Length: 73
Length: 335
Image (cartoon, rainbow over all chains, first blue to last red; front, side, top):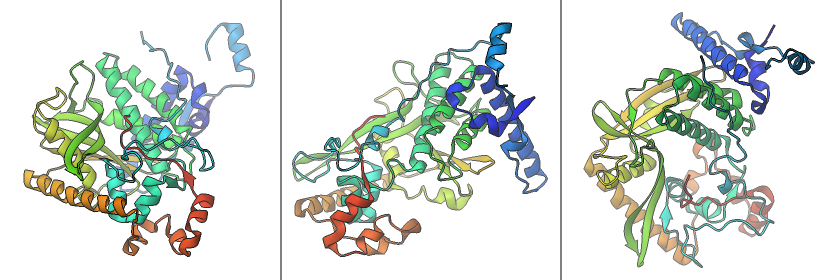
């Protein structure tokens, strides 16, 4: 499960992890690619960040679970 | 293996924001505008902001520059521009320190996010999201930019160069032209002063036509021509201004690059015009009277002071104090 790019971007930047930042960059590249395709087609269709995958969803207990597993979230 | 540089950027203040984020007028700690001759209203260091202001309307200049009255602590158009410039400056510095492009991009992305928290969102094209996107898309498009940034003597990139050029003396006082050059680049074998310009308008001929004639751009070019050969960042006379137009949409960002050239004659004319403007400014300061230019009231959607000017002069000061915030613009402050 992942957030949308819009959701990830709306989270406080102070809390962005390196993985979040990678997901943001990948999401923005995806958005750019899709927007370029629409432009080439001559379409005026909007490509919003709400329709682009963002970072992996963080559950309520993600931090706790990650602590147990010893992995970074 | 991927290498992550430690993400230690902490944004506690916006660059240059101390000029704007001074508390309300009641606070007696409003910082002094050091570009004025002490105990006078005569400005001896001028930048494009103060020059544009006095050219538009001397009364506006008095309220906006000399008294520092503003509607917002910092307009989002200006804040967004400074934030974008800062991200680009950091990019160039990281790359100059041999940080790989992917890592530098990650750090600039995070920095854009941190800066973006300060954008109030009253302009839908200038938000945290549009700032992060403008930075990532720009650095993807211009990652291997053929316009190579020049370097200072210490090897650092020639980004955000502050200058203060001595002009002629007016009433025995040395007057300076100050500003901040975004970057200096070598492109197609020539040196250019480069500038980022963000807009929500289309990047067409009309957009680029605003840079000729343009006081700010001519000021940068004057600085470049004056310093050429004397500092490593500008090894030879710049051939013009390279404008990177950045169109900000809510869901897209578009870029277009254009070169604006000025002849020596055009620059000299700018300088002689400037001298006349400064003579006029000295007359206003001497008389301590800055007349209104009613022809400018409707420009660009209307002057912010129009509602004050439409009232009887007896009410002006009270209305300014109750409706505006005070924060002084000082051209002498370095970025």
